[in-house]
Length: 481
Ligand SMILES: Cc1cc2nc3c(=O)[nH]c(=O)nc-3n(C[C@H](O)[C@H](O)[C@H](O)COP(=O)(O)OP(=O)(O)OC[C@H]3O[C@@H](n4cnc5c(N)ncnc54)[C@H](O)[C@@H]3O)c2cc1C
Ligand SMILES: *[C@@H]1O[C@H](CO)[C@@H](O)[C@H](O)[C@H]1NC(C)=O
Image 1 (tube, rainbow, N blue to C red):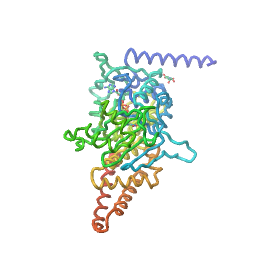
Image 2: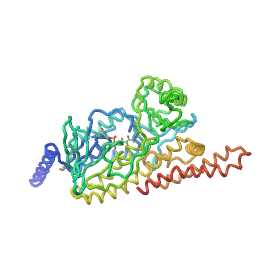
Image 3: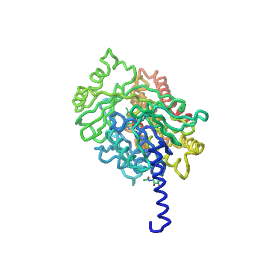
Image 4: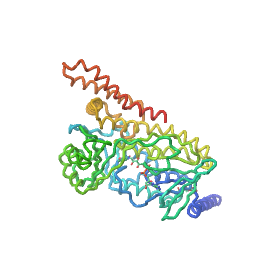
């Protein structure tokens, strides 16, 4: 800062920054307008702001969110957070370090530790926390960014040019007053039930089940510091500690599950009659207490394939773009990896100004294919495992048994690294999946009494066929959308 020329440069930079701030606040104009200060919106605002872009971040409610989603961040997500320089958002939120999975099958348990990627790399760790606390930390990071202005307002529509269809900004309602924000690039990041996908995204979310959530207090888990997956003859139940005293339990209930029908006492009846006896003894008390307190909440479990963005001036990201079953807790990891990639593809070096909508579109087309490197495995694994874990016919049950057996005896380092969001090779996933299918057939063979062996060839073909039906549609969804 000693040479005068340097001083001028700093001066003019400060002036430009002050001007950009004024444009955001007085004229509601920025390089980027982001709808939704959730996981993706905040991380993206910080990433772009730090690159010198002028960013407006719109959020319907700045109060701490209280939701049952996004509470376990896989090691792959922790890594992405570190790349973005946001690792400190995991500090001071009473987060629990997670070292792997505990999977039980009719109370027969197996522990799967996140393995090191190479012998010399550190042991991967995930984090479990209260979603709202983590989001508030991310929002603080955005608020601390001089190039980002956060506005509490509800987005109600996109402003589009009537003749070019280009998106120019966002219509909002702030304290019952209509308002508009304009950006060269508008980002839709307001989550799973966004209205702004219509006309810009060819797919609709598909839902087969909901997760119902309760918070248990001081529940002693069989394996502290592990994400618990409980399998039996009911759909999967997840448990993980999210604070010193709190443990989340998520119960998957497929649409039209007979055991949860009104006749059988509805969801509460299902919890008492089917879920309670399937839980570890020590957790049953805290579970009943939580049920009595009556804070049952639910969220739809959706599947939504991603698609290339083709609208000038627009970018759809996060759950608004792409969703998979939350069984494996991969959503935030996908979102944060996407921010890392976007930050590269839309850097000032690659795209000097977002006014160049054609160049932005070109980079977004590249984004669509490049992001698959980190999202494909997470997406397919989540959907395929869910089908197995929620098995509702004999063939799926055979695959479920084979899968659990594989967890017990198989070479599971790669599968666990895939769950962690650290191994990103779809072919490796497919290989393991079909190994599970063959193991399932072997287990079936061992279980078949001699006098039933004539049927075995038929049964084994059905199991193999079912395995194909489980995984192939999701592979195609990744290849063709
Ligand atoms: C039951 C369940 C459990 C899950 N568990 C996990 C897990 O353990 N680990 C994991 O990684 N992922 C999990 N996920 C997925 C994860 O929650 C999402 O992938 C992640 O939250 C997506 O982030 P996002 O920023 O796209 O959306 P969100 O986090 O939903 O953020 C959207 C933001 O937009 C705001 N908003 C909405 N509408 C408007 C509007 N009109 N105007 C202005 N602002 C608006 C909202 O207030 C919110 O702040 C789970 C999902 C479900 C359904
Ligand atoms: C803000 O943007 C300016 C360019 O306008 C850039 O030089 C500066 O590094 C950015 N500041 C921060 C803290 O990210």
